[in-house]
Image (cartoon, rainbow, N blue to C red; front, side):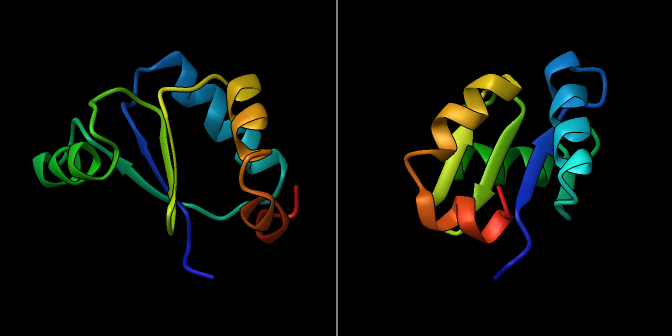
Length: 87
């Protein structure tokens, strides 16, 4: 399994919640702050078709602009990824 990517903006409250959720579930992430790196912003926009954070990417699973509860609901549509993440 490739490491999931989490695109964030450092001051985004939803990003902070997402980071805490993934940490509490022992999920290692490749964290990319799109405000620090324009290339990461471009990659996120290309991958997800939008520019809101947090945006989670794991292979073909893309969940954009979510709260933790929205992430939990969205990952249900990707049972293989949910299992890989140990959720």
